[in-house]
Length: 186
Image (cartoon, rainbow, N blue to C red; front, side):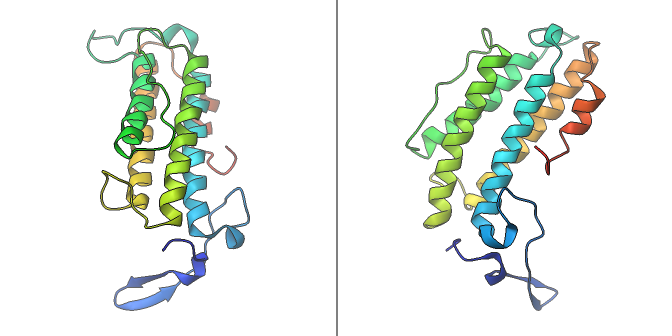
């Protein structure tokens, strides 16, 4: 279903069918990668951006309580992001299901390892779906929607982390703020 080169896919725009080629940057040459590999590359890049953020969170705010006393710490937000991935892997009956994280004992190093483990498991799950019927068990409409959901969820929480660090008086370094948008080099 999804395994054809990108030029085999088409889009209907105002009633006119248009064929298109990719201009997305990927680990492989776009023309050789095909749409499935391009989608998997985006999922992998999303994870690298999340890890980049974890690596750039000022140490003093990792476990600091929010200024108003309500809500999650940065460690708890990162644990939640990973644990939601694990929840979906369980629901989809994935072959590999990483351990969930404890938000109270999580360190940045452990978070980085866990995010990479859940990324690898999600990559395998999505790759299998892209090679077969395009579906993820328990998620509708399809694997592309699932990948979009995962990326949006991570991005939402990256924004929360950046805002919380600022509220705690330790904003992320400017380089890291811009670096999260450098998908072509991460």
